[in-house]
Structures are given as structure tokens and as C-alpha cells.
Amino acid sequence: MSWLDDLDDDEPEFDEADVRVRPNPKANRPRTKRRPAHSDAEIARVLGVDRGRYTVLVDEDLPTERTALAVRARELRKTPIVTGDRARVVGDASGDDGTLGRIVGIEERTSLLRRSADDTDQVERVVVANADQMLVVVAAADPEPRPRLVDRYLVAALDAGIRPLLVVTKTDLADPAEFLAHFDGLDLEVFTSGREEMPLERIGAALVGHSTVFVGHSGVGKSTLVNALVPDAKRATGHVNVVTGRGRHTSSSTVSLRYRGEGGNGWVIDTPGVRSFGLGHVDPANILRAFTDLDAIAQECPRGCTHLADAPDCAIVEAVEEGRLGPGGAARLDSLQRLLETFAKKGQEPGA
Image (tube, rainbow, N blue to C red; front, top):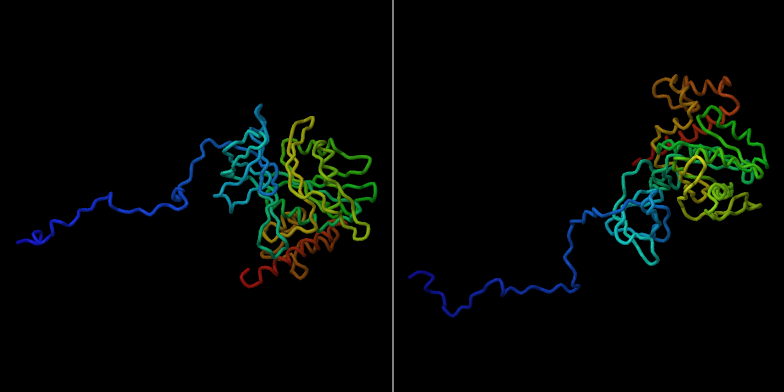
């Protein structure tokens, strides 16, 4: 007798229909790591960000061009989306009232302008994407110009591969010659502007065909300049505190505005005024490049030269001591050495 003969003929038989499956209490589909391809996504320019809502321009330069609102897709919750980005948008991007699209991806960026809270902070704050020019706005007075802050802008711009330009406003209040001497020898296009004479045509010509980010200290007249170049911008303007000498923040967000000139169009990206511009994210090797005249002389320095005050046989130090770099040479060298010293100390910190 085999063991099969011992089975009870009354035992019930089971099949798949008898398996009990626990119901899904949330009545939703199980999660999957597979994401849709979004082949129907439209490419749009991010014009601004406001409380989690992104204003985007769809079908740029086409007859169907329109602005729409969009939100970030869940899968992009850790991806920064900033003004100037080229975003892939799905959903309702018609721009009609009450409609909302969804940003599901970001196109590859050509540049990324960043800053940090200070030079030791490794946390990057992305300012703008895909800009190819930076217009630094400085006042000749009220508030007083800060050449070392401008130096930081130049370093950040060149580190990002962005061409810098300089505008000095309020020249009717003070002569900017001494301030501009700090930048003698640099490959830097400079514009000067007063209350009665703003070189809008010259500045506008430099904007055509470019995406230009405007940066500057609060109160220097940056928003006034933006409103003059883009009449429908309506950016808020403020004044300088007579007690502290500091400007009041008027632009609270970064906004991309279209410039329309006689020679063509461009993009003006207005940013909030800042009182500091940390370079904690910058490659120290790019600091010297911002001082183009000093960088050229540095080719004559000994290998491994630090360019600091105690550096032996430093060609830059010798050139300044001999007066070969003009009246602004000593100030530029001092600014360079301060930045180099900051990064040298950062490199000595544990874990740096």
C-alpha cells in the first residue's frame, strides 16, 4: 500500500480561487519605480517662482507663445528649479485661468550662477540658470561702492562661465574715477549712469541676444535701471537709509523679463539685492582668473607661488611694488590676497 492510499478522500482540494487577498485599504495602485516617459512634454522657460508655483513661458518666440503656471512633479522634489531653467511641462499649460501644468524634468543647463552664505559655507544657493552675462550694478555714492563685493561677483561669474559687465549709477552724486581705477586692466565693459543721463541704448545693445542676470547691493538703483530698460517690468524701487547707509530690499524674488530693443530681443533677469556674496562653492583655481591683469603677470611667478604678501619672488607683488599696474594695482592685489587667504584657511580646516 502506498502513502497515497492513506489520504482521506474527504479532504477538500484547494486552488487559486481559495487564496484570500487582503484588500488595499487606500484603494490605490501599488507603487512602482517606473516613470512615464512624458513624450508629450512641452519645453518652457521658467520666468519666476512664487510659493511653489512656477511661471513658465511655453512655445517661446512662436505664434502660440503663452505664459502658464506649473508645479513641481513629485519625482523632482529634491531637484532645484530656478529662474532661467528650461523645463519639460505636461498637463494643462494653456495659460487659462485656473489651469496648472506640471514640471516633470529640467533640460541640461549651460551655466549655473551660485552663491553661498559665506566663504566657509558649502551649501550652494542657486541664483539663476542658463545666463550668459552678468551685469553688476554699483552706485558711485549713496550707498558707497564696495570694490571687494564687485570682485566677488566677478569671481562667481567667471567660475560659472558667464561674461561680466559693470554699470556705475548715481554718477551725478560722485565721481566714480577712483572706484573704477580698481578695475583698470581688466577685460570688463563699463557703463556709467546719472539721474539725467542713463545710457539705455548702449546697455540695451549689450543685452540683445543674451540672457543677462542683474546683481547688486540694495539701493544702488538696479530696479530703476530694470524698469527703464523694460517699461512694463514694474519692479519696486526703494531708497537708502540715511542713518545706516544701507539700501532697503525692494525686489524680493528673481524674475526673468524680456528686453525688446531696436537691435533685437534679450532677457533681463532681476535678482534681489544682496549685501554679501559667499564663494564657498567656487574652485579656488578660478579666483585668480577674475583678476585678468594679475593672472597674466602670474605666468612669471615661480611654480607653486601663493601670490600672498610673504610669497618669495612673486611677480605680481613685484609688479605692484614697482608701480607697473597703475593706481588701482595695489587695491586689486589686496583684494586678491584676501580671497586667497580665506580659501587657504578653509583648506586647512579638518574635513575641508
